[in-house]
Length: 294
Image 1 (cartoon, helix red, strand yellow):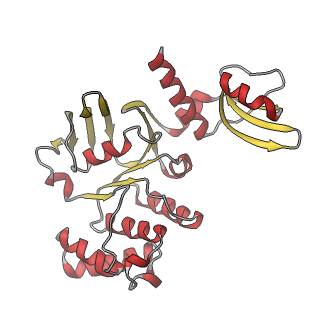
Image 2 (cartoon, one colour; image 1 turned 135 degrees about the vertical axis):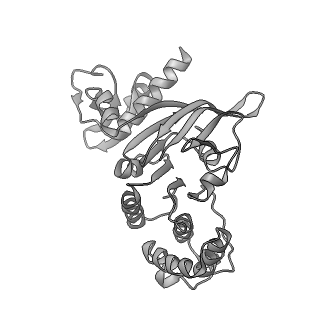
Image 3 (cartoon, one colour; image 1 turned 120 degrees about the horizontal axis):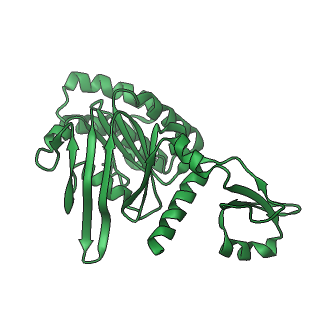
């Protein structure tokens, strides 16, 4: 099983690019696609899901160009878009049954699969209520269930934990981990902790281009020894931010503890800290921007 993205670009206007010369080769596992808002993540997901065509380049599923033969991919695809729409007057069972029919699933198997999924995404008690009365998080759970209806070989989820409470987010992360194995899962998000908990590999995207594709531990190794904790007065924070990449800050009684990404210590009093995946992500994006502006 292989998904191969070769030199894909998507142009929306004369100088507006969603993707530029993007290439990636993926095999079974969970790919965490990380990038800031507007980086091109959703554009890439829509192209892979055969919803839109690239302006240049091609995507291949097991050697087949999906633009020329989209059904080769569509029958094994599960997709949860970022903006997932529902029919508010239908209940969850009716809605999933409708989508199962659209996907041409056997009616008997579909009923059994829907029962499994309603339990899996924790919607059993609300399954017969109209979706129009659901919270955002509950609608997202319905979206996750519909993406899994056909037991897909390729599962694409775009910002899947938006609207989920902490308990639901943990449940979803565990679900994604369980689904990995003999299938390929693309998890697109800007929430680093979602990727950290589930991904077997990570692709960082910025301004439509691939910044880096690596194992989580390789990304961490790249930023090791470059993370510092520096306690500074509150009134110095703005000045420090102009000179250093500040990952986050914590207010303390003795000042502000700034988490700084830098090749060298920002101050003799700064202490070296253990790198996190968020540090690695921010460092990769900052380095990429510097290279583009050079």
